[in-house]
Image 1 (cartoon, rainbow, N blue to C red):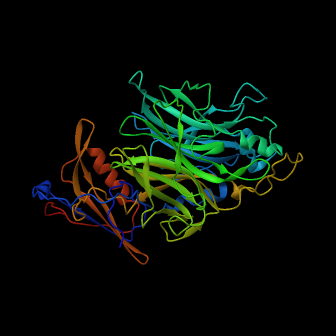
Image 2 (image 1 turned 90 degrees about the horizontal axis):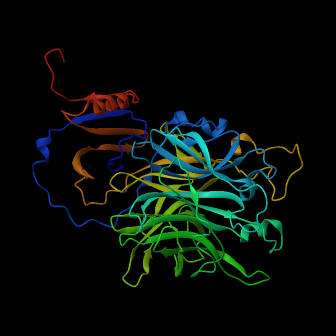
Image 3 (image 1 turned 90 degrees about the vertical axis):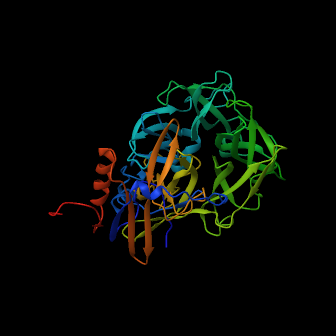
Length: 480
């Protein structure tokens, strides 16, 4: 049986749906909750089957943001004060001469918007890109890739500002071949703005420089958040020391601290996970005083199943973080489950990003994904003009998966369908949606209120229309 969730969007096909009307007086009896257990970000839910067509035609639909003319990668999402969701994502043209490998040369960071976290998203503008020609004086002369968007307080002005972290590189001709020349010089930078629509001002230097702490060589794929003590935490990928001509060791997932969001970030001596665990590209967030990092779990060495898995820890008084792998560390396997019971296997599920709701709880997992190999017909060196492009079905896309089922972290009574929530300076009632599943049959119970705003009932009616059957209990006149 699947436990209850407070996510307002249903994600499973409902064969039987019951609406339970509860009076507010039912909440009058006070209950004493047990101490909250260590939290879990949740597990990925199913998607509407209507979006499955995007796997083939690469048109943008809810939960799948795709473009038939572009490779897409690494979406990072934030909501503005008006309720609009902004996705910052990497993209590069399908017809570039290197195909998928073109991410290292011609990737650019774009912005798309949607009215709901799952979309559908619509492209708005290109935010950052390379400079189009060699500029030896710029660390970020070539491309802009793998963004991480966050809003944090500037410790000097005390203003909330938007910080867009990204990866860029340049070619110093200091390695064995052109591919490694660009790879080894990758660094992390940041652009800052007071609005998600810009203008964005790039910081002139990388925010972190190798070697630092346990990380060497290149530094890429950042995730950033602000700690409760006001400092700034970055998780990222680098390399461990190695042997041979260039002494490049295995991939290493590390972390760094800074007093300002623009850095400098100082790498720490410990790693998030041992280099022997094949995982990469962590994102980071704070949840109920715990620090979380989610990874691409290559072979399931973290959770037991390939996909997206997580670790968690707490900051100690000596500035170390005691990281641990929970027993249930899986967020999503390498697949999409549809609400008609079908499953689509994924070739890639990478570069995770966790979106938090108003209460700071994980609500959605965003990740770069593909159902077929995106490197088909690509090459690290330019192909001849007229060479075949990557097949349309092989193009990667940005995937949005709702999270549910494990993220009850407050020791709440799972039998209550309504809770009082405090957000900023307001109070509101959260109404639960509970899905129980056995085999192919699912029953969803909606908690409901007798008195609420019109928009609340409009949303209920919209959801009811998506289901097969509706059973309800209520109070009405003799005519029903």
